[in-house]
Length: 481
Image (cartoon, rainbow, N blue to C red):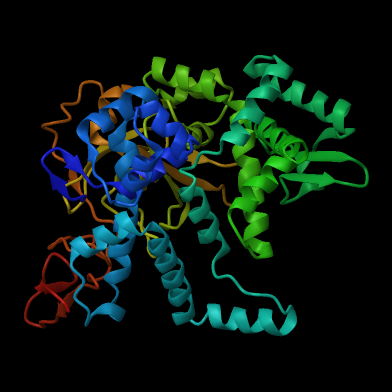
């Protein structure tokens, strides 16, 4: 936490990030706050405090929620640092929690570097990274970058899952098309045909086989499998348009990420194309207004914007435009084996990068109740409470006898935002007891959990053949050093 003296706060790094998120120079924000640029410079270097009056003026002038903007990154960085330093690798190093918080707040760049270094170390420890690096050096002669999926997730988090260039391009396109949601597919197909000479064709599954979308560059045809539902078809057309019409914006965003190997660069470009497609289907101003008016009723939003449940949930995590922000949601997609294939957090939920999720979170129960939306108040070991909803979704159907793909979508927010959700109606959020969950078993220190799959790496395992506990693992109360 920042040092506090009376009503004065030393929050230089946080102040700088707020300014950068607003796209303002030190001179511009100084004019808006009625102070000198030199004073802003001193504030950002933690050589001068920010008074409560300046913070209030900042919130009023730029319509900011300072609680969200000032703490989300630090909370996320602290959770990830805590996970890293819980590893047995650091068992002999007693790093106080406050030092980790100070590092997350004052040195976010160092925190990010530690995250990447630990991720590379984790994969190397499993014998995967070193083998891949040797193969890349010998056969390709290029630098190897571990886990491109995790690298792209880091880039998305660094941008708070919000890309203003793509939002503006999507809004411009929808204004030019000027069609309701139900007419979007036809309008996108016409745009591809008339402006890009690309013909859209819906193809039978025996032709497409396991492919859902394929662009034939030579014949200038975009082929969509008949297995893709209507919202998915519109999404794929918007994605193709994004690659063509937003090429410069995509390269600009990718360029800001710094040096990237070919694999994460391609994956980031695909991810940004998907972002643009969702923004075309659910334009920011209209979607945010509808979400607020409907108290974030996902099923009604899906109907109104001709989109799928997962598409709407994912879009809700991107509503981070300064001066027009939605609820800061987090999202998780998991299969019935517990594998996490998607996670986004525009709030402060501490997702684990190196493990699964807690089985006590009812997102896993949706496979037993496929037609029901489940609600739950959850509480982490530090006492932080969240409200979450979860529902199973089916991806494009698979031909018989192939297994039908199923996933669970979990969407949640901090408990202080839950009253704005239609799903929390009738629930006493203050008195409802939260289900105690952990980030994952290896980091959770809750005792007597019948669902525990492994002991916490921060505690010494106790083995006693004379006793069988509720939990399969017993461990000491003292943290290992």
